[in-house]
Image (cartoon, rainbow, N blue to C red; front, top):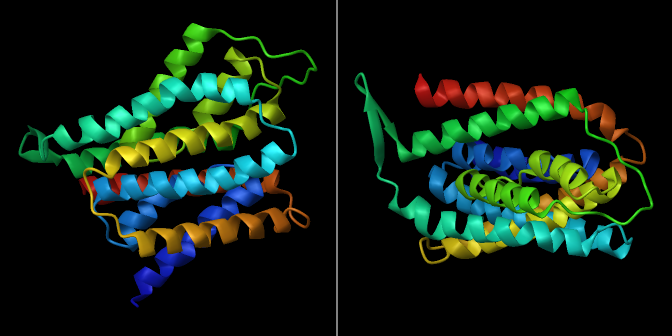
Length: 265
């Protein structure tokens, strides 16, 4: 096993560790690890990322459901347009995109490069969200109220983004649940994991008709991420995950810069 491959599997633990420590954001590292450490094609990497993100989020969602933190009605209202969008994107849109999307002054922008650049943009937005950490708080015992048009639109948008880059999009989902479904922040964070799990795994189903899946590798990688989650949850007894959130945001921002440099220069 080569050093970069070992680094890739260590990265799987890191993804889970971050998810366990700060409650989100770790999945944004999945695609870069698959592409740059394990040498996967970006399109296949986003497919594999959907499975890893889906499984690890499901573990967190089940844990939250047992504690009664998940609002199931809100989760499914948001998840339905999201999983439709991500399934259609993975099953039909990604496969028909041409290998060379366009050419500009001698530069050929391929599908793989475009996916990684778009992913870098999403990483920058996620990093800014973590660094600023200005989530809208709402703590109330009142039942949630729904702004259905906004929820459907946001769900569809998040589904398309997830379908393209293979990331969970929690930094988009959580504010939407607070603003449009009027959920308390803690419930929004817990509910977002179930939404991410549903849309990611259904999006991955859309890929089954387009790829031959290396199941032993994918299950091993996902298993290491799940181990990392439980390790991260245990470490929260000794480390304040919120204090790590901004530092991790800066790390994600640097990674986004590296991807842009790597793909363009």
